Image (cartoon, rainbow, N blue to C red; front, side, top):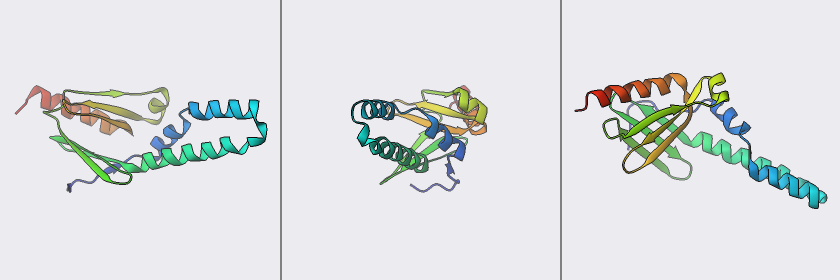
Amino acid sequence: MKTTKKLYRLSLKALFIQWIQPSYVLVFTIFFIFYFIPEWWMIPIIILCLIFFSRYLSFRSIAYTFTAKEIIYQTALLKRHTVTLSFTKIDELYMTQTFFQKKLRVASIHIKCKDNIVFLPHIPLEHAREMLQLYDENRAAPE
């Protein structure tokens, strides 16, 4: 599905927030490797690189746009997957912010419909507020 409106990509702030999130797999690996088998010290470094790489790919694969009537969300890791959600079909749309998101002026949008749930992580705060406003306007005056 082609859209005429420009798709927004996540900013570098989103990548920073994704990279500083704790990885419990890495924590447990470091503990067990350094406590039981210290000569395998290279494994936690390899796991750290894999975690950073997977989070970078996740960051690069997300794109979104929105108009007065719909939100278009696209992921494209190996295969492009596009979800178009009309504001009138959305059951619930809300915004959340963590401490770091507040400092970096980004927010996460949670969208619930009858058939799917979409999560837009770390989008600019202005876009999140505009989506909430459009959702409220479309809810107040449905077609």
